[in-house]
Structure formats: C-alpha cells, structure tokens
Image (cartoon, rainbow, N blue to C red; front, side, top):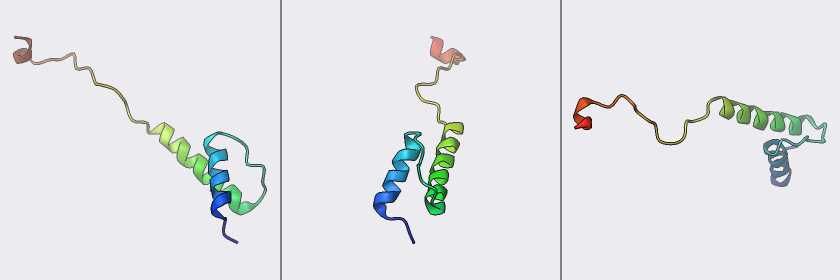
Length: 63
C-alpha cells in the first residue's frame, strides 16, 4: 500500500528535525532512511558561502 501524502509529510518532518520515526512499517522506514541519507550526503558536500578573499592580487590592481 503506497504512503499517503499526509504520512510522507510526517515522515519528512521527523527525518529533517532529527526525530525518531516511531513506526516499524518497512515502507515508512525505507522512506525515512532515504531522507536521512540524502541529508547526510548534503552535509558532506556543503557549498562554501560568502565572498572569497583573494590575497594574491595582480600588480595592476595595486596601482
């Protein structure tokens, strides 16, 4: 039986807020683990934010 949109939303919230699922349904656990794995992958490949500082300026810019 496919998961309802309500159940998917509840599982997503539990996974993103680092809560336990509280269910032993294999379909729900699979979705929960999928979301957690995607979040862990995003943390490993985080983007660098901000303005990069380049201390090696060309000589033309120093004038």
